[in-house]
Length: 220
Ligand SMILES: C[S@@+](CC[C@H](N)C(=O)[O-])C[C@H]1O[C@@H](n2cnc3c(N)ncnc32)[C@H](O)[C@@H]1O
Image (cartoon, rainbow, N blue to C red):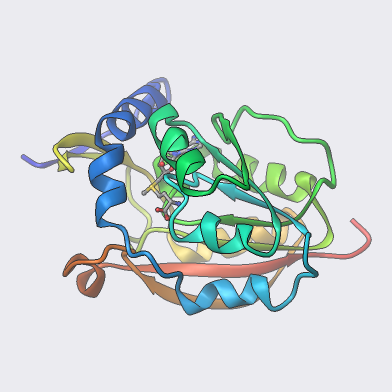
């Protein structure tokens, strides 16, 4: 069976995700689309040059970190050291940190925007509300948040046996839960939409991912 339920709250799926991305970093990065989607304009059109932007689960840095680093002060974090090694080569002007988004610390109010593409669904969904609390803490009031989730609706976490030859783990809620989480953590949703899979090949046509664009409410 290529898909297996993996929804044990005691299990540490982080190691599985980290190991899989360390092993497939080159293959994954080699198949990524190299130009950013239009949704990234939601960030670039609203920020002053040199604003501080955090890319969570930045992977090899292409296309998102590279595009944002052309105008902004970009920090990328990723749990995979091999992904970060590629990102450093691809985007030499940005700062990169090997870190788990659920554990790393940034000073409060230290970013003007946070983006996260195709990454949150690799973190157990039981932790997602806490992740948005972290985002809210790191962002200034009025700060921007742009992220994708999985197309699948609510359901248990699962693994797939052949993601670029590796066993990979996914976990997500449906869009309505993320709307609740955003409201609860102090964000105002400004736009929802759909992005493709992000690959250069045929997958991009088949795979769709909802995205949310939200703003941290002033006065928080
Ligand atoms: C599908 S890739 C997306 C990479 C990049 N954002 C892109 O659009 O190509 C998911 C990335 O999230 C990273 N990741 C997964 N779990 C993470 C966590 N808990 N903290 C930080 N990064 C994580 C993975 O190592 C991987 O590089």
